[in-house]
Image (cartoon, rainbow, N blue to C red):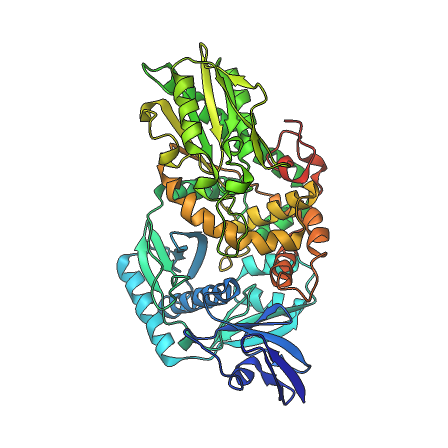
Length: 554
């Protein structure tokens, strides 16, 4: 017998050894407004077919949990790819990138013909049939060499490259009937769990839409993101030029000694984009009644501060005289900071910034006045005036950087033609393989964990614990203004995870296994294992990545 402590009920029960999580679930009664699709076993996410042979702590999860969403979305990708193979034998459905609350996919048919709306409708109908049949999704585990041979025979070279460049001893894969696939997350027990989705034509491909995270019984709202899509397209074009389609390709390139070249190319591409942005700002500055303010925003750890410094250099090269400040310097005093329901400070709230004072100073600067600007003391939690002054002189341009810089309420008294808006984000341009996309937020979470640890401000467990609050604030206060920017800048680094691996692994290893944060730390550690580690010694001191790992000279 084994003793199971269920975190959902706060009770213990004894069960026979070898039962699945699904069988154990039936032994506990608790409120289940949505279907249970996975569980955390000793703070590690497992599928419901996972068998228990020792006493364990278990927390059952539905779609509202982050880990639950990973399980559901991976299972849905398998459903879509199987349906595509059933309808068009020899075809390959590739999940290219997360976008618009779903996944953008492309269909490569065996005959080379274009994917049509009728093709998409046929695959969608087949997906519905598979869900209605409630087919079992079976889990298999074999040695690495056997897994490589299985996927090679199926022509899945992307999976062969990924698996063969990792240090896996055993590989877990899944089957639905005679369809086989590999996923980095556990899957649901059967296709009948996958009742909420949409598979529709979108921009020459297909959009696989997911349930709403708060209301899993319905689809997540659709938001058109044309500028974000263009950034994805641009990144994929450069990846194609460098013969990099997936992480497996990247690993092989690094093993073959191309890491230094890839770092230099990544830096050159980012610098080229910054130069183009600077030149466009200069062009608009020269127009009658032209741009005088550059607003720079983005979510946490997207690289705003370092980008602002590099943009300033390029603006100087254009003959402009940039001056800058951060919206953080206009924080209200700590005692006046808005709070979250649990009583902790909500530092990402718009009202954390004294936007009235900031806007008054901006208007005065545009009127030609000399303005004394504040500096926020993060130690005392007080906004201080220490004699720092700014003035917009001939050919001067003001750069304002901060997470709320694009919020219209921050500069609504400034004419629109005076503003140039930049949104910085980390947009994943590579996938692990054709069916395993990388969450775009993983770049920033790993960056923040490393940065917080290096700065001595927060432990990895503390950063992970606060991350859900950060993400909620971003959805409310930052991302709504992304598509309103004049330009989007992608600060992700083609080889970033490979470089971050050696920094992040030691930090993540400090998260204790008996804490709730271990679940996310374990996920990130497993994720980093997919990347061949690369030394940071070739990362230049001016790199955006140096703002995270240290060694920046900006």
